[in-house]
Length: 229
Image 1 (spheres, rainbow, N blue to C red):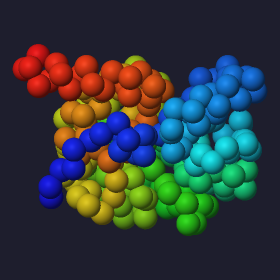
Image 2 (image 1 turned 60 degrees about the horizontal axis):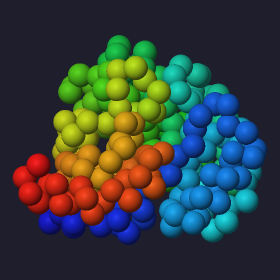
Image 3 (image 1 turned 90 degrees about the horizontal axis):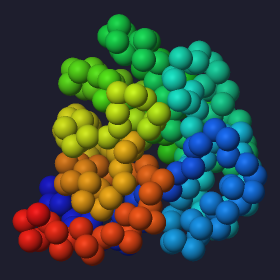
């Protein structure tokens, strides 16, 4: 597969501009949505309790089972259905880490499928917290996600102390799912150089809160990379 060069415009088209801070107020959400539209973002990711929102031409992504993933599958499914009823276009679910670390791929697939069935026709991304997993566990999560009908696998919530997205994890995820699923890199992505490295490793979507800073630093990052920095 030939890798298309990532431009700022292509980045914005494939970025989920994110606001998931728990103390977010209605006024802060309103300012965030205004800034997102001005920035040229295509979609935003916000907490489900903040829905519904005035979309302002933006696509809305939300999260379920967030951030720990230890909720029952039925609860995650209800959250997903409610989010769709409240206007969500895409759902990012956190898997139960206990199932992953136990290697219970049958139960993990069933959990993901429950959420998949609760939001038919909507994009479903599966957050696996890759920084806390072995390579084999990352592969297992990706395979269960594909079997359950997910559209993307996603590196992290950005809230796990183990860390966020890495080139290594993204490459494993991309190699496992091929062109069949997308790979969303999320967690700790704050500059254009890192964004391009993750893109080259196989990321097809980004979860970022520093979207504006990434775009603003694009040209300088290109110059540094071009000079061998």
